Amino acid sequence: MSFKNYHYLIVLIIVFSTSCKNSDKNLTESATVEEETIPTLQYKPIDTTNAKAILIGKTDAPYNFNYFNLLVHTGLFNEVSNIKKENLGDSLYVEFQKLNKPQIIDLIAFEEGDLPPLFTRFHITPGDSIFMEIKNHKISFSGKNAAHYNFFQQLKETATGNWGVFKGNFDQYKTDNSKFYNEKKKILEEYIKAHPEVSEGFKEQTYATLKYEYLFHLIYPRDHQDKAGNYQGSDLDEVINKMQFGGEISMFDAQKYFDTINFEDNFNRPELLYNDYFKRSLPKYIHSVFANAEVSGYSIDNFINERDFIKNKLDDDLERFAIAKLIYNYHEAGLAFGQKGKTLIED
Image 1: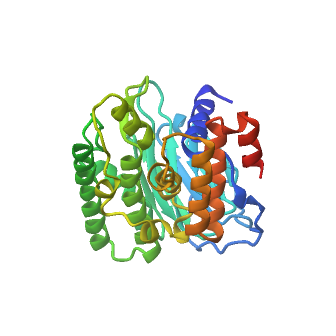
Image 2: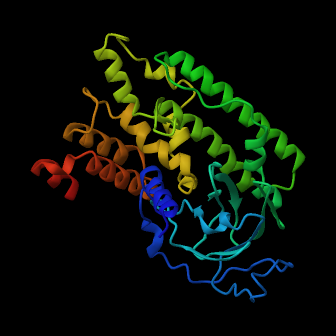
């Protein structure tokens, strides 16, 4: 495995978690792929028998396909193992073999030299046949549902703002993020007007991606930079605790800060379990806002508070997802190192 692939997989593990509970479901039935003319990979016949959707790619820089990754936000955690991928020179062929519902997928293609990697998202539906072209360092899509694929690339090229950076003032940080969120929503609204053929599923998942990305940045304030100079976030309760300890604030008004968010309306949404930012925001929102913690952090008492809140507020797949993320996050924070914490997590 090349260094770049290895490096990116580490990033995926950190940012998106590691495995997929949904893999035990029976997804062996074949999908109907739209009958349309699509390029073949070096004249090799395409067998779509087991594919839920297919993507054919061409590039003017073959290096893109040597270090090419797709992230499917399926099931409990995010998954890359349900993708069959072949590349040869400037051509790429991808089968999505376990795609059982419409969702938004992340795409990254590394560039040669010091150029930043190409990144975009696209909305995919089972049965899709997608053609992707990378030309002059830009990504474009075509196919029957082309309007589903091109929005995020257009958003990237159109938006002029950026997510806020937290510098000690919650009101200002929220204002900066709200401004950028509203800009993105306006671009989406104009895109839908220009492409009335987009599906209701596209609208639901795309609006949700923008909304929960905004909420994620509120819950996880971008307050420090990594070695590459990119801003990263910290747990909200840790930021508040540090500021209170330093005498910068005495109280934090969570109700005011999250005044547009209602847990029942915004998080009891099982239809969004395949949405990346919804999945990232839900456990952090519970941990930072609704756990009723007397002291911030990943303690036994906080684990119990969060567990009980989840069991009282969520059901079925959402409850299982939230409990599994709770166990994972507290295990990663070291709760299982002590006997009492280990027993609690095992139970």
